[in-house]
Amino acid sequence: ARDGEDSESMRALEELCRTYWNPLFAFVRSQGFDPETARDLTQAYFTELLEKDLLKIVEPTAGRFRSFLLTSLKHFLSHERDRERALKRGGGTQTISLDAQPAGPEIGAAADDQLTPEQIFERQWALTVLERALERLRRASNGSESEAQFDRLKGYLTGDASRMPYSEVAVELGMNEGAVRTAVHRLRKRFGKMLRAEIADTVADPDEADDEIRHLLSVIQPWKKA
Image (cartoon, rainbow, N blue to C red; front, side):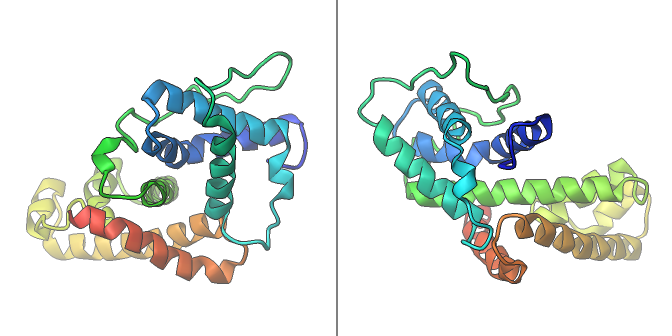
């Protein structure tokens, strides 16, 4: 995304913005901004990344990408806090296409008042990483499992179906219980590889992936249990 202004770089930047919109939007919302203002501010932050070439200062060996984004967002908001509304960017500059902004107004809202803004950001970051890893797995699984089977078994990866007996799922899928257990075991192993690959893209050293996985799971597990 930082290699230049050609179409490939712009597509990479737009994908980056869509990918990490939710965690950053959640942090902005947690600062007390209403949904519309938070959307404007998040858009303005990403635009500043482009206009000021802030990604060029990111060193691949400098640490975790989520830390860079959160620190730079805080810096951006400190300059925006005294303004009555987010500035509208434009006037000859390149704009970032974010038509598919996935964030709902409830993300980062006051309902999360038991969490700090940083915890809200990290929780949403963890959810984003898990969702992207799951999508990687879905694409890689295409042809090896039916879509219905994948959709039914993926809950065992995220914890959403942890209380569903294998016997019930077996009946739904027309499989025996042993086959379901085997399929889930294989899916978990492949999901672990996809999660590691997703996280490896956001850390300076691939050896840091395990620490990052443990951190993100520690962020999300208490919330999932609640």
